[in-house]
Image (tube, rainbow, N blue to C red):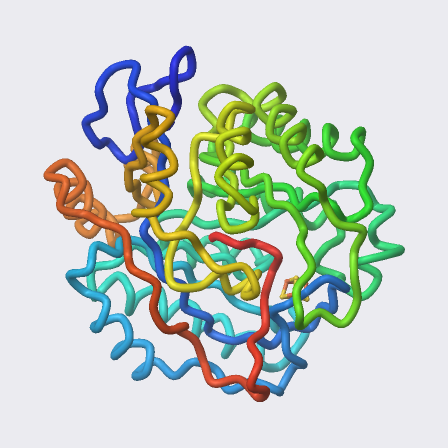
Amino acid sequence: MGGVGDRDRGGAGGVGIAEGGRLLTYSPAVTLVPTYECFNRCSYCNFRVEPGGDRWLPLDVAAERLKSLQGQGIAEILILSGEVHPASARRGEWFTHLYNLCGLALSLGFLPHTNAGPLTRSEMGALGSVNSSMGLMVEQVTPVLLETVHRHAPSKVPSVRLEQLEMAGELKIPFTTGLLIGLGETWADRAETLGAIASSHGRHGHIQEVIVQPYLPGTRQVGSAPGCDRAALLETVALAREILPPEVVVQVPPNLLGDRGTLLAAIAAGARDLGGIGPIDEVNPDYGHVSPAQLQTWLAAEGWTLQPRLAVYPQYDGWVSGAVRPVLAAWRSRLAAAEIVGPAPGPRLGPTVGSATAPATDAMRFH
Ligand code: SF4
C-alpha cells in the first residue's frame, strides 16, 4: 500500500487519497519500553542495559502515560523491548508483562505493535492475539556478522530471524521487518536478505512493509560497526523496491536520513513510508525525529502529501483478532474522517533506567 504512480494502490490506512496522488505515509506512534535489559550484546547497540540492571515499566505507570496520550491522534503504541533469555527463570514473567502491556494499550483504545525479539510459537501466537501487527528486523542473513557485530548476540543468528518470519506467516500475523545496513555486509548480502524476505512473503503473504534502516553511530554504544553512507542507503532502497513484491511497502526512517534532499532521493528510489513518528526513536536516541508538520513542509514543495496510517495495513484487517477489531474499526473511522494528526515531540516514555542515559533495543526501530 501507499504507492505512487505505477505503484499506487489506493493509499495508506484506507484514507481517501486522490487517484494518482503523490502519497507518503507514517504512523503516529509512541513507544513504550517494558525493559531495556537485553541478554544480547550487539556491538552497535544504543539501547540495552545489562540483565537485572533495569526496573521494568510498571503497569500502573504505563496506564497513566497511555491515558495522557488519549485524544492526541496517536494510534500506535510500539511495545519495544529488550530480551530476557529464553532459558531464564524470568522469561515467563517478562512475557506476561509484554502481554499485559498490549492488553492495557488495547483497553485504552490504542493499537499495539510489538517488537520484542525472537519468540516461541506459543509466545508469538499469544501476543498476536493482542497486537494489530508485530515486527522483527531480519537485519542481514549473512552468518559473517556472527563473527563481528553479532558475536555476542544469539538472537541475531540469521536462521532464528528467518524462522520468526515463517512463524508469523503461519500464524497470520501482519508483519514488519527490515534490513539494518552498514554492519559490514556486502551488496550480495543485502540482496540475499531481501530475497529471503520476499520468499517468506511469497509463501505467506504477511509482510506489510520492509524497513531500510541505516546503522548510524550513537553515543551509548560500547562497540562499533562499519556504518552506512548516503549512496549505500539510497541504492539499498532501490534494490529493495526491485526485489520485493509491489504490495510490500519500503519504509525509511526520516530521522536517520540526515536532510530533506536525502529523504526526497529515498522517495525517488522507491520509499513510500516513514514508519512510526513520535517523541523519541528509542533505538537511535541520538537522532531526533523531524515532526510530521516539518516533513509535510519538505514534501509539499515536491508535490507529496504526508498521510497518517495505522500499524496494520488495510489488506490485513481481516487477520486481526476479535480483541483488536473494535479498536481498529474505531481508528479506521477516525482516519476516514481525517481526525488523526501526528504527535508533537514530547517526553520519553519508558522505565527509569539505571543510568542517566538511555539505551536502545532490538535493532528494530519501529517500530
Ligand atoms: S540491538 Fe537489540 S538484540 Fe542487540 S543488544 Fe541491543 S537490544 Fe539487544
